[in-house]
Amino acid sequence: MIDKDKVKAGVQLILEGIGEDIKREGLIETPDRIARMYEEIFGGMDMEASEPLGKRFHVSNNEMVLEKDITFYSTCEHHLLPFYGRAHVAYVPNGEVVGLSKLARTVEIFARRPQLQEQMTAQIADALMEYLKPKGVMVMLEAEHMCMTMRGIKKPGSTTVTFVARGIFSEDEKLQNKFFMMVR
Image 1 (cartoon, rainbow, N blue to C red):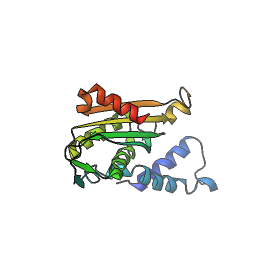
Image 2 (image 1 turned 180 degrees about the vertical axis):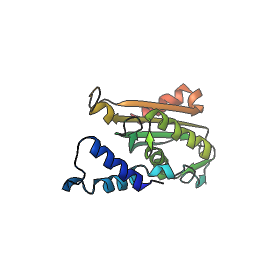
Image 3 (image 1 turned 90 degrees about the vertical axis):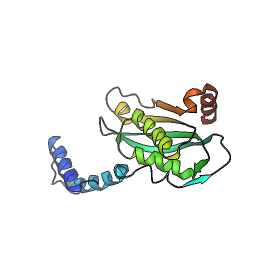
Image 4 (image 1 turned 135 degrees about the vertical axis):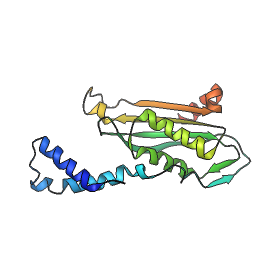
């Protein structure tokens, strides 16, 4: 749960630290706005992947299920700047599937936290393995990081790609290649 009072106090200190007048008209409500925004963008801190992955349906088809181009927005835990992009999530059912929106919800839960892209990729895959118990999972994230584009090296348009394979995806190169072909 976000402690809005602490966030407001922290924002006031940052504004003062950069030399701003916190009583200036345009900044008076900024600490409160930031606190409310943080409540939204870090809402995944209070959520568990077990919730969206809890309702499953029995199926006889055990072919790959792929949900691709799931847009996400997250925040780099090193600089507290956004990174955003697309997630591609696949699994091979082991007798059960979830509704497709549940895959996107799982991505959102992990995106709405201070995060590292590499860590988020693994967290999504591990949650699917734990709660859905499929034969295998593959997750790929493609994202642009504002900490690389607006500061530091300043390389806008560069994309970071991470992927993890679990279960039969880690053992079967043909299955991995099928995933990559379907994503493109």
